[in-house]
Amino acid sequence: MSQRTLVILKPDAVARGLMGEIIGRIERKAGWTIAALELRTLDRATLEQHYAEHEGRPFYEPLVEFMSSGPSAVMVVEGERVIEGIRALAGPTDPIAAPPGSVRGDFGTIVRENLIHASDSEESAQRELKIFFPSFS
Ligand code: RTP
Ligand code: MG
Image (cartoon, rainbow, N blue to C red; front, side, top):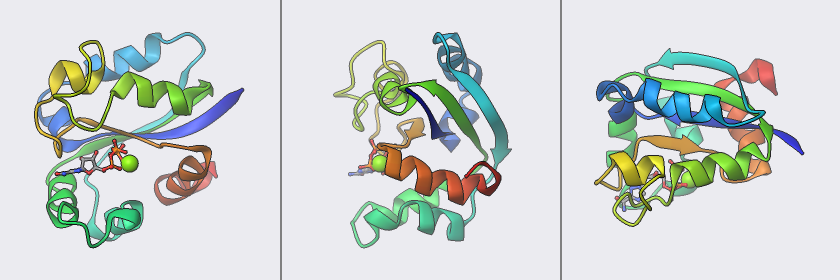
């Protein structure tokens, strides 16, 4: 089942020079294609839409601050079961709990600065693609 998902390489990944490493893992997966890719410093309005489900939580403000602190790489990735697949490639939210071999497990230590975002369901993917790549939805 071919799907489309929104992936963000967060400002920590870009600042640490890990874009190539992470994009390489996505590119090498059989049958997955990067359909759009852009470096973008995300503004508050965009992030408020994107993270609406977390509004009011203690980590929300620092998260929006961090996510707007420098350029991110925003991408549309398409292919076989790509929504579930990129979540697996990223690993669990907390990088210390994430297994070695996953992006977060290999490169992260801090929950907020966990390198990568990927849509968590078909509904989220639809909603998020509309925010970041209106021409793809
Ligand atoms: P994402 O949305 O970025 O793909 O990550 P996720 O689904 O694994 O995690 P989610 O629960 O949606 O949280 C969104 C992002 O907020 C930051 N966060 N910080 N306790 C904390 O300090 C905390 N909890 C979450 C992380 O950057 C997480 O990816
Ligand atoms: Mg999430």
